[in-house]
Length: 254
Image (cartoon, rainbow, N blue to C red):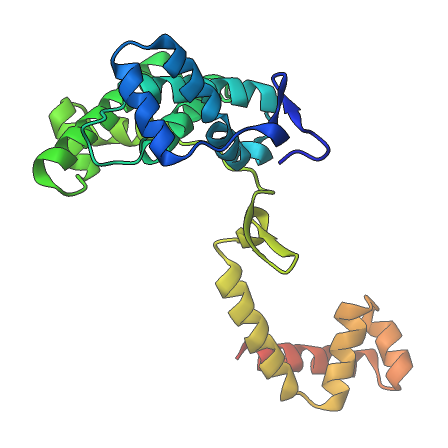
């Protein structure tokens, strides 16, 4: 994960054990019966799971020790809240819990400060969204969430946008054989398509000019020469250069 880094929070990550599912199930049952030693053993046996989640946030520039500690808190919450009666693997339940804990930490410690009232609105909106999904078995619209909260739609949109993690321009979005594409590579300008089409049109229009007209435009606008200098170079009067230049530009525009 981190170059030449094996130890995180005093833990040698290269020696972290991998616990089998049967062992997890046994320990979880003992945890539910109040066995604290089983709880400690289960935590230590799932530290590699925490490490795998922390790897997803390695490009954020955060201290890996801090993320690992926060991830362990998410792991502990997952152990304490896991329902052993459900037919779900522990890791399936624990990973979202660990990710959520790390994301909350990143939000609360973000350099972009969001007011507490907006955050509260966002968290309430997320709770309402979850309730509506459970009730109707489909994703609710922002308008439906706003109606449940009794708030303007715009306030809910702003609140939900405020808790979205910022993305680095240098975050990779695709990699194939070492040729990586970053977020920065996908940014464009709203006028990109228009400029691209204009450029094609101009190139096509220039093809229809005579060799003399092309040379005049090249000397005037590519090399920055005056009409007098152009007239001396191609052997015609300055008045002719002016007339040919205007005619060529008119042809391009049309």
